[in-house]
Amino acid sequence: MNDTKTRAGFIAILGAPNVGKSTLVNRLVGAKVSIVSPKVQTTRTRVLGIFIEGPAQVILIDTPGIFEPKGRLDRAMVAAAWSGAQDADAIALLIDAKAGVDKRSQAIIDKLVLGGRKAYLILNKIDLVPKPVLLTLAEKLMGTGVFTDCFMVSANTGDGVSDLAKVFADAVPNGPWLYPEDEISDMPARLLAAEITREKLFLNLHQELPYKITVETEDWKQQADGSAHVRQVIYVERDSQKGIVLGRQGAMIKEIGAAARKELQDLLGHPVHLFIHVKVRGKWQDDRERYAEWGLDFDA
Image (cartoon, rainbow, N blue to C red; front, side):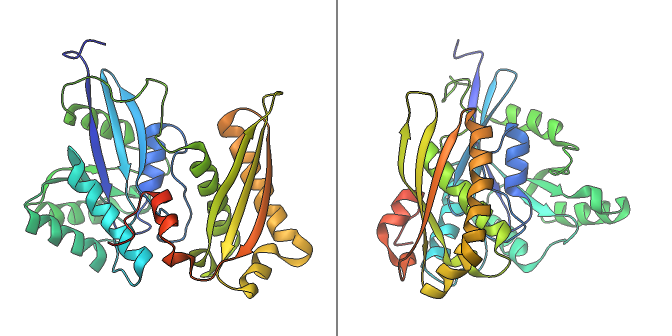
């Protein structure tokens, strides 16, 4: 493509946990590139979602939710979020319009003010909030001086998202596209597969346990018939956690495996034979190798 006619660049999507960043990124891309769950802090690493709008290729950085870090993994996730913002051509701050500005969202705004950074304001979940409340919230936030524009969307229903896509396309600089036309994410298939299984753990284990779990794709073999044999390990920190993940007579792990396999098959368009094992690895959160695989800074 002719460089003078095309545009390409990075937009970082910032926000507190659970405001809908991953849902918005998936909606803009038109496919699932980031895992979504009702739990907070689901995204652990920066995920690049890519979409094309006219002559522009927009690379979205779906960052981990910014919160008050308590341990090494938390610190690494928050550092990744701010690093994504630093590297981007533009920043968008997503606010849950129903929840309003909590102290975590306020802390992000304060940091943007301190850094002299401007951002787009995106009020999400507008389908759940009366219009007068929305307008009051927008007015208050625009008064901070941080935001150049305000957009009201529902990432869940898609309302307002096409207008946002056009604005993002106009915000990226002139230049050649940075990824092939049919690429929607830079996440390797092995890591995406692990993230999908981790999402199913989040959705099925209704307690704090998912935060004590990590998933690795150990082996991925394409077969002559076009199918894939995928072997994964779920690491937990204690034996008691292993029992919860396996479930009674292995029922839980079967359910999680079936859901992950179906989603992988839908995404890849070919059969997947998924084999999942559960192992105990105490203090995996202090294992430097895990962080390198997720693209996180162990020493953050």
